[in-house]
Length: 74
Image (tube, rainbow, N blue to C red; front, side, top):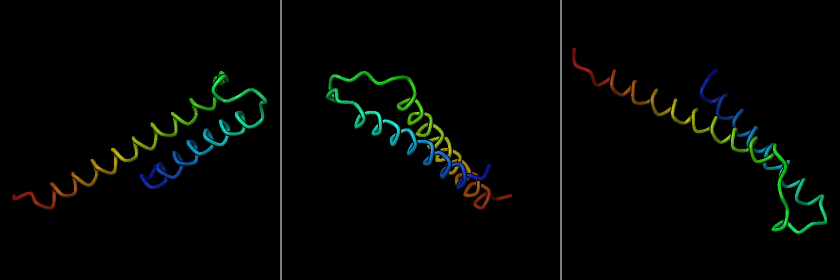
């Protein structure tokens, strides 16, 4: 998968987790501070953030490799 595509996909996953969390909080009459989140929304958000960080790591590594190859003296 291309780095840019991975970044966009990860942002979509994290956004879906945030929207799901907000929907859960606003649909319940219980105050948010007394609420226990079900398994799902926060984990999806965390997964999206991890995939996004992986894409950023790939971009940095790719950038460093290109810089190294461009400045290498043979």
